[in-house]
Length: 227
Picture (cartoon, rainbow, N blue to C red):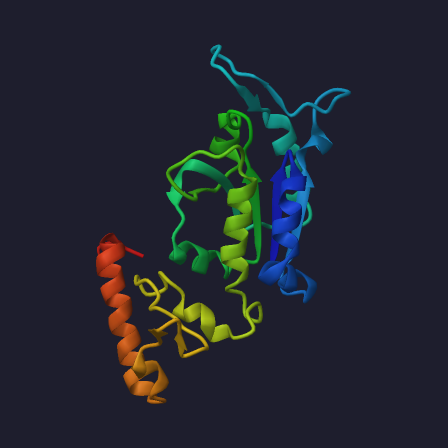
């Protein structure tokens, strides 16, 4: 799988992509993630990538030319399944979206910055818009890292135990059940006896019940949503 990330501040993505599951997947050749500096196609001697907004609104807007040129360069090398713009306007990220994208071969993630991007990019180049939540952050780099992480961990071989992803929260519209490790008793706080029973059937039943009850209590809307 190949993920290309387009950014005006690529340094923000260095650490999130270099460590843990994503970093290991890159080093093991399971995914190829390239971060591209849009200033490569910036305008003028200072390689400007933004300009004032038509209409006089406050804030700078990312120009269309650098994004267009970078996307066309990448498309000359391979065909992309999706060109995704990280935007608060987009469809809210859900586990089912990450599942779907993990099956793709080539994806571009476009990080907005400043006041946003020239809308013509969204009209003519972007194929999908995804939001990581109903809030605004300074740029699309952190959302892009988050989306990439949620995708990469689903690639076969990325996790040491591939079955682990199947029991993650949201995979079956439920939150995960509580988890415990050693010691069995600490400060008078005990691990539930069923988890120490060694009976897989009873343990699974307990986990299923806990997942359902936690979801009803903490995120009841998940039981109504279409995942």
